[in-house]
Amino acid sequence: MSLDDEVRAELASLRAAHRLRVPRIVDGAPGPTITLDGATVLNLSSNDYLSLAGDHRLVEAAKTALDEVGVGAGASRLITGTHRLHVTLERAVADWLRVGGVRLFNSGYAANTGVISTLVGPGDVVFSDELNHASIIDGCRLSRAEVVVVPHNDIAALEELLARRSLHRRRLVVTESLFSMDGDIADLGAIAQLCTRHDAVLVVDEAHAIGALGPEGRGLAADVAVTPDIVIGTFGKALGAYGAFAATTADIAELLWNRARSLVFSTAMPPSIPAATLAAIEIVRGAEGLDRRRRLASHADRLRALVPSLGGAAESAIAPLVVGEDHEVMQLTGRLLEQGLFVQGIRPPTVPVGTARLRVSLCSSLSTQQVDFAGKSIRSVVRR
Image 1 (cartoon, helix red, strand yellow):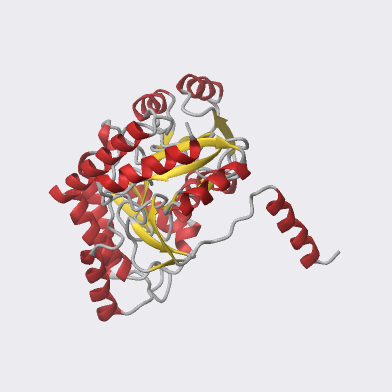
Image 2 (cartoon, one colour; image 1 turned 60 degrees about the vertical axis):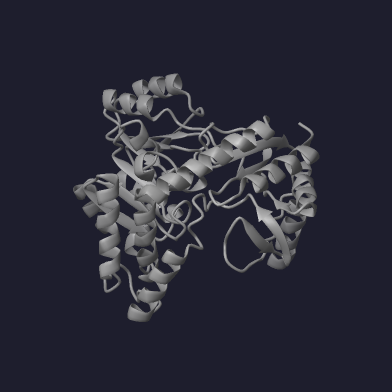
């Protein structure tokens, strides 16, 4: 059998299991209403939580940088790819998050794989929540450290597992703060106390919390006065731009220059991206950012009142509805599309088998009428 034959058989298997992914095409600017495959729909599948991706101030900042410095960075950060805008953004994030050092990465995936594989290796152990993002899982694998999977949000289990592995050179605990598919929140206060007690490094992925939650949008660690060894955050969700960062101490940031392969061996992000992100941070830190976060929280409360079966923490803009079977969730996505509402069905391997779900995610620029429409539409198709 040829490679093409094998691939066709694999695709057929995915299709039969209702797990074949087919990208949808978006046209026009981002927003709560989008053109999807040629149809205008209300979008409840975006991570643009604060509705900044199409904000004119970010657009103008990027345009100005494009006119001044062109499109591409031209090289990796360690050759000629470090533009003054990259450095300015790193300093701005360090000031915002009150840390000693920041390093930019081209994506959250690159940040997690680069950071984890830099901090631990053979002879070390990583304790990873079982529902952590794929980028964290792959970072653990790439590190070649021993990986211990911790039952989801189980503090007692984490404590027991840490106590059993006291002889490793370095121990690292990694968790999301706001889990991307369940919308629930880690007990960062309790986890930080365990890390202190057992001399473990704490890495917190705040991808879905940065900008959207916490004082000045600094995330959930700041909200509970926890200072992780490293915070991973993204610019492509609530901040409306692109890329990611590791916020940490000056010394660890220096080590990432030298050891994080996903940073060292990647062309730097285009300078127009840091320019737009700087504009986003200014908005997020100010009164307007607070107002957007309050509207987002209000929308989350309103939708959960309309559809009580939606999951996720009360303050989370991520509100999943677990359906179960893959084919059923995709049928529901199709029926919602017919009503003019896009809610993406999420299937394995993104979520565990038997937990396929509608992943509802909200943005601040939705109107109350649009939230009400969404709630009515979801209720009409799921009947729960």
